[in-house]
Image (cartoon, rainbow, N blue to C red; front, side, top):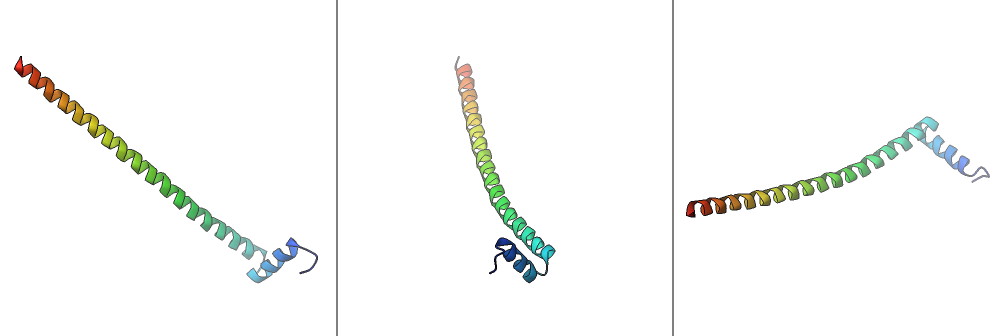
Length: 82
């Protein structure tokens, strides 16, 4: 390695890649792939959390509905007994 440091490393990598544009294209593609993977994982976590929240909300709704039906039945029984 010469005295050019990072510039020399970059220019050698560009030469191996077939030019600066080709190297930058490779870097962009790798960054996009890495970002898409991270986005998919993050998106999966968000969707998973939303599904859990929706399930819990539905269960809470069903529990309230069951209590309301039980109260309605109890009220009907009380009305019929009087």
